[in-house]
Length: 378
Image 1: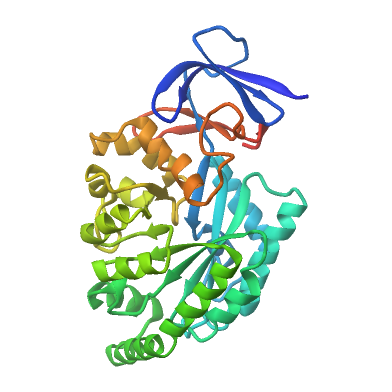
Image 2 (image 1 turned 60 degrees about the vertical axis):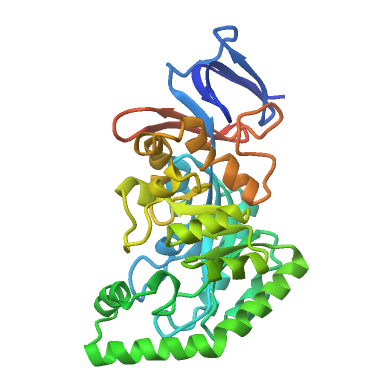
């Protein structure tokens, strides 16, 4: 039996912050005591919060492809990513792996296999600090996404899939201004080449997206996989998501869509970088605005792992109606519930001892220690 206590801590529970200690025994929370009744490692008045649960991060892919045309050893890329997420207080992470090849990325079949296999191998080899799962990011307007899905969806480490349509003129890119500003520079295209590129992407959407959506949903339902919608912009998008049984609404782009998703019972997920920056990077709705309206449920670090804990402590300052336990819940208990991980996400007796010691400094908090199932990992 292993046992230790964290004493003199400000413990963030689901609905309040208490001062006291947390007793950990054999990797789970055994007791929560208020006051100074238990000796243990002195937290010096720092916060102790649940380990963060991240549902959608592209960060593994960024380590795997650190430069255009460059791929890294997948295990090495994963370990680099893992060290960064654990150091940011993330103890459970769904690594987004894009599936579906297009002219921008080329044939990614081998890359998908390399990344999925890396997570399975590293987990089996006890290489990782955080608990890693795979989130299949399905680009519907591509010719091979349904085959990629079939090849990977039954893997036990796959726990979530999102249905995406990044076609110019749709969803995130309802207007072409932001799409052209981003992709024309990235792809180094002339105006004529950009116009052809847009027309080709729209033709591919018409050819592939609907039949891929139907095939992926059918297969996912057969194995009981959780699904997320992505970039819902209109009530029609939300109606489609509800019809198809989406559990999570990732990055709705308008207040109208976010409110409809929330009212329909989907967990509305927004980017923590949006909270930190005070706005969307592409001109869509502000996450803080959704929080003030009571329709924000989950935050995701998306492309900056540390933004998750940063946003959790910042959100109560920019949205007066949100308390610290509520904002911490958006990065712990709520994403855990959305992913059907009922053994974690809160500091409660019997739950996993996934814990983070945080010193509150202005404006950026400091992660001072991280435990996963009672084991110090950062």
